[in-house]
Amino acid sequence: MRGLYSMLSRLCGVGATLIALSACGGDGTGLGGVTPATGTWSGTTSQSRAVSFEVTSQGITSATLNYQLSGSACSYTATTTVGSSSPLPITNGQFDTGSLQIGSNATMSATGRFTSATQANGTISIVDGDCGGSLNLTWNASK
Image 1 (spheres, rainbow, N blue to C red):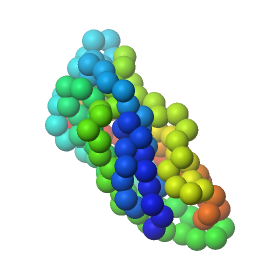
Image 2 (image 1 turned 180 degrees about the horizontal axis):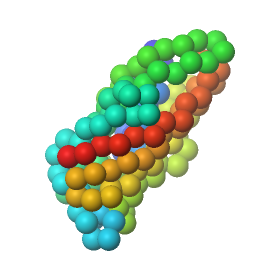
Image 3 (image 1 turned 90 degrees about the vertical axis):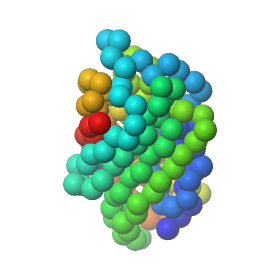
């Protein structure tokens, strides 16, 4: 497994590529004034693998993702957990990491949207240049 850094506020984590989210504050207010429920959210990706994250009144503070990536040079399954003391803000019910460097030759981006106080969905994209592979996932989670 390759090292991974970034999620919420460029979270540092260990493991293979995963959710990487940038952060800088926020009030946790969701779409249309909906505030996502605090606590652990759990769901699945389009690979039928687990995804979970922790929501506080300040935003998202940690996440765990299980995924499988296959490329021309390798194939691996990884479970990675990342966390930060600087929460990823939820703005207008959404979050978006943009493109982040998460390994020596890997990038990822993640988006999410809270559709209610207890439901959310989004996308995760990972490109692993060393493995020669990429991955585009959707995810759904609930509280």
